[in-house]
Amino acid sequence: MDTIDRDKFGPPDGTPILPWFGGAYTHGFVALHPFFTVEGLDPKTCEHGTLVLSGSAAPATLGLLEWMDEEAANRRVGKEIDPEGVDGVAKRYGRQIGWRTICQQAGFADHRELDQALRTSIGGLRHDLADTAKSDRLASYCSQHRIFPPTEGRFEPLMQTSLAAVFRRAGNNQLIVGDEFGDDERLVNVSLLEQGDLWDGMTDLPQYGVKRLIAPDHSLLAWVHWDSFYTLILGKAEALQGLKIARLFEGFWCSDETESYWLTQPCIPLVE
Image: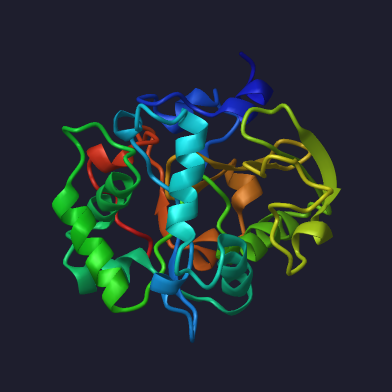
């Protein structure tokens, strides 16, 4: 598989990220998806985040799709604002709260533990890695302080403007936007992504969501893993020079050993 194909698929789980790209990208920044608040919004009255279901809990009297629809309808009961409404308001008026702050205030040792709590909350970890106590503690803290947790597997609304800025600063007036599997790729003007609208649902972007941003010369790539709470920004040193990515996003630079599931690896400190 050549390096351009790897732009579409990303590294398999358990594979170090940077070596996977075969030298096409020499540096990678893990940009953590922010927690946030919106003045006047209480997460308890909003439908937001992933609906987590276990197939073993499905009733024998309903088909899988019917059961999923029923559970989604149950979650909407008593909610005043739907997910699109929350995302739209958050993109315009949300106040970001970083992982470092959440760790300090909610008693997590570092961003790996916080990642463990988040991944546990969506059923995204093996039983031996999951920690329901941490997940419950995070949920309780967020509820108490009216904090919305981040969402996995997408370019977060609060990060979209800054992501477009990264490609603009690198001298790209156009970029390739792609869905998760590379089935739908489109060359668009960066100005389209700089608008205040949410990327999901824009008619000029992939129908099933934007999961990859690629510079036309393949000097930069932004990519989201389907059940991860971060965006990976990749490039060579010359392409990243002067972009000040660590000022736009909270996160850390990958080592040569960093994998998608970095919560199991030695801690790399967040950039100050």
